[in-house]
Length: 145
Length: 192
Image 1 (tube, rainbow over the protein chains, first blue to last red):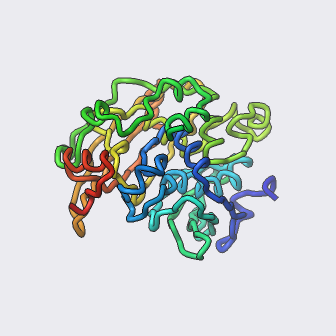
Image 2 (cartoon, chains in turn blue, purple):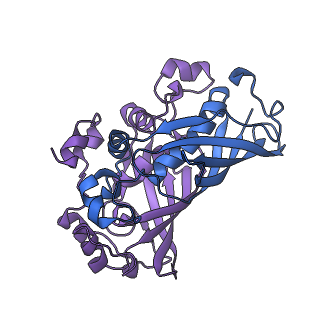
Image 3 (spheres, each protein chain N blue to C red):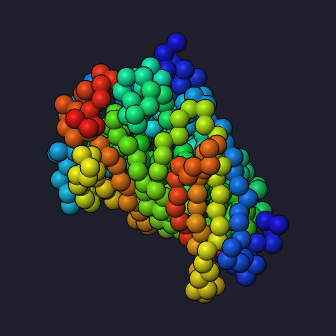
């Protein structure tokens, strides 16, 4: 299916394949090392017991990891055919504590036939926790061949 | 074993090994710029550069995690029509944290900071061999419901002066050095 993806083949309302991720402290440590964001709110369970930056006594997932997984929904869909992520706008609504399981998805909302090489689609993005609450929402623009 | 030692087990790249990971270290905090000191409109070019290596890009994709071979497999990337592997779009996080360790822009490292959202535009994919420089500008700051917000603009350029990424990044920060130091000790400070 991915090989047939083109600007012409996409329709408003199309839903992209979802990504699901359970987050452990090891995942957050790995993300801290690779993003170089070692903020203790993500990395130090001991510090979080008293600091409670989000009103929670536990570590929470990096906001940029949430955004990265929202971007991954797009990269998995569009990058293998030469698509490109032009822009993303994300609002992080709720903290994601260690032990959460989130699902990330996107829906095509607009088609912009600007011209060959510049045609792009707009998408709504969402990240939802195991209780069905949105932890992040956003929009994206993706060029497609 | 402390949390810093736990994380050291995951280090794989040269940059990860030289990066100072203790964001609670007093000496690092002394070099930060705090919400009440931020000068809106001031633009600064970070003096150090980020030379992109394949190991940096691969490590970031693994840490998302995103197993797309486009981020580490040259042959696969060429089959897909690229001239080589490209970075995951949010790889720019690693670049910013590497480059912003003190002064204007160091807000992203502040203990007690929160990330309510971002707008990022990508103008060209990041590739192996790119040498990236960063310009940062305080864009706005405001108080809302007792919280101290700020928004800054970041722009990454390659070695030819080509714009690669522009971001508008919003943060909620502790107000002052004293508030950050209370956070370092593990005390509440945001609503103080």
